[in-house]
Image 1 (cartoon, one colour):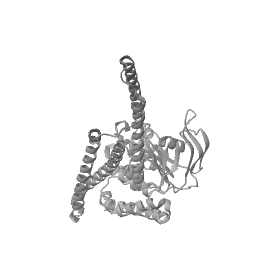
Image 2: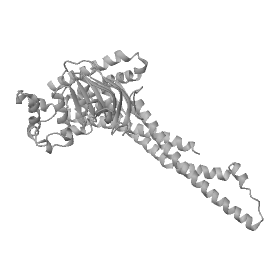
Image 3: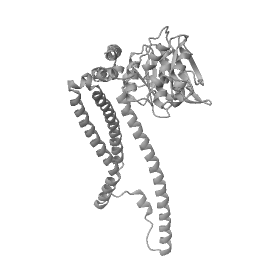
Image 4: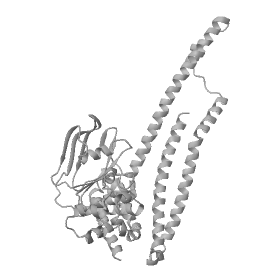
Length: 429
């Protein structure tokens, strides 16, 4: 019951955060979509309650103290390596209520921006300022890699905890599911997920007022990801987040910034709009690649025509029979005959067959997933499932539901990209 009460309190804090965002931004045109997204999220929260009650992870972030604004500020900053800017004229301000999700394709510069924000990478030009009250919690792969391999979780925590009793430290580590022998196990024997949890635990203990998180969920299992989401929603400080987990960004961040083409701009839309933007960019890249290939093919064709025309002219000169009609053939484009149209249509069907099969398979996969989700919803509607004796069964079903929802989202994006690719291919004929 205590665990259920704790989960309930976490969820109430999350609801308060969402209500606050909706109240502030519902009437603002630029934030309307994000406000609607929060409304939907609020409506879905009841689905999480039973699972959170059984979650072995029960941590929360402490309330920050002594925050001034801005906590971090980049102004007209050029950011990069060896005097070559990867990002130009970057303007980012992190205040106590900032909740920024950084979006962008791989290699666009999100991690580079993160390094500049935390002071790990010196900017090439512009201004970088931090508040005297800044207390940074920074998570990235490197922070996991530099954990003391020979030290145990409790030994690492003791270095930060001063005179705090071991009983308190063990209880705290237990909230990250470090219990029994694992508390006294050297971190070199830990899995990637355990190292990620330990890194987060050490960050939480230090009571940061700004969290800068670069792919925090990469090694985490489903329950820990959900616990982190709930904890971040209840966090009273600033958050700057980079993650491939779009659900995490949607559930935690109020503002979205797009890193693209060397620029950083506020993204006008929600995370689903970003999925469409990403699909469109990939479509454009594919079109660009095909255009380059087409130009190369045309050049080769011109060379071939030139050689054939030259050979024809030599033949005409030798035989002295046929006139040179090459100029006419170069300027006139005869209409396709029915036979040529039939061949062209056959070629189109042949070229688009793979993408059509992919679309058909994705649509079948979506239909199957939707059927599975409907079946799960029927099972989850059974009130007996929420009895104490059925907790394990409930957890299995909720895990399955979350996994299927992610598969559905992934397949929808795949379908969108395939359909735009097909349209592009058909337009070439």
